[in-house]
Image (tube, rainbow, N blue to C red; front, side, top):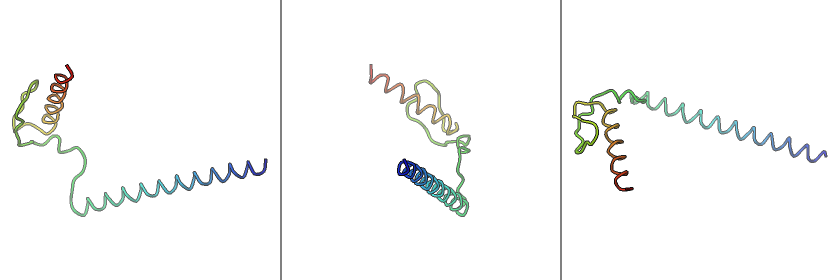
Length: 91
């Protein structure tokens, strides 16, 4: 039973070390990305969805779309066009 107990302790120790290494690696990558984006003044997030897109979409089936609409509306129109076309292809 002594060797079985030692194997369990060793297994838990290896798993703990691996989890700690993964947490440190993820922390390093996130900190590095945040620092580099800040230095280059690059905004991240979803704030751009409320801005004017400034481009036309050739075919809009369910929603009307204009170049003055937002990126969010352009994304919605794109998804609906995709669902419409894929539904027609499946049928």
